[in-house]
Amino acid sequence: MKITDLHQRTFDYIRIALNEKCNFRCMYCMPTEGIQFKPEDQLLSDDEIFRVVSVLAKHGVTKVRLTGGEPLIRKGISQLVNVISHTDGIKSVHLTTNGLYLDTFLQPLIDAGLDGLNISLDTLRENRFFEITRRNDFPRVWKNVLSAIELPEIHVKINVVLMRGINADEILDFVNLASEYPVSVRFIELMPFDDHQIWRTGRFMGVDMIIETLNKVIPTDERQVGTPTEQYYFKPDGFAGGVAIIPAFARSFCGACNRIRLTADGQIRNCLYSNQEFNLRDLIRNGCSNEEIFSLVQSAMHQKARDGFEAEHEDNHKRTSMTQIGG
Image (cartoon, rainbow, N blue to C red; front, side, top):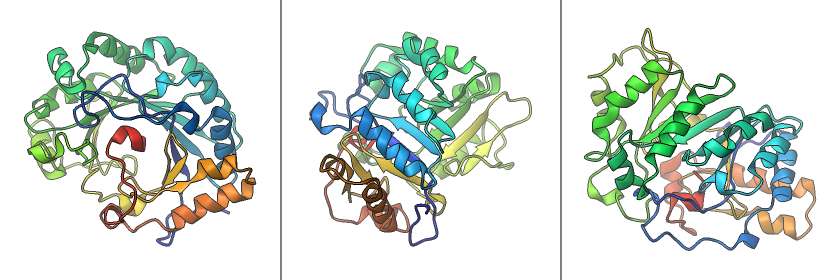
């Protein structure tokens, strides 16, 4: 039996946050001083993650994405990828990272079976990198990005959160990156999960404004098919890679949603914008059966709202930072 909801959507993709901690303090994600992280014993263990993946793979889940926080902080990350990639039914394993530790982990991850890599990189300028991340690590990250996109064994996507007055003037630079290298550059709308730091400051740049700006650089009248979230995808003639726009705040892709979210502390969230959570961790630790794991996940997804706007109005526990939700 596959995992479905009331709106005829089927869920074959799970995003698993491995931790809440991160070595950056991006302005749209966490305050400078950080946030109160969950104790380690409240986070899912490797064995608990393996069990969830194994159960859901029997019910149609074929794709796993590992997120954080910063997933490369997690001890034993390569072994974790290896076990998941060899789980019956799982066809692909992907990871989202800020790229800082890729010089240490990239090849072991590929050897373990990693299929795809998303790197969060909001600027190509060293001084601006510090302003956005509050860390002086651009040279190392940029070197790691170049190393990753030159490897034929893995497909790399660059995620760029666009913000007016901060990095919107770098669209041409990022487009040139997609022109030269076989990488997908994805411009993402700012989302209201920033612990109230930047969302209300007029930095939001909606999809219409992104297209208008992008149209000055490349033709945008020949829209192609990307992933379900890449509602706008362009691959001009001669480009080694492609350029996409993800309308994360506009939420116009909700009708095609196929993803389940599992937070680092073991809560199922059926929508990025929902505050409703379903406690899978405690169910597992209380000795549940595999059937009960599936039943809870199916119940959670069955209650999924029609779209992110409807989900946003649910009045439940609220997480105030993207690092607590899971990328």
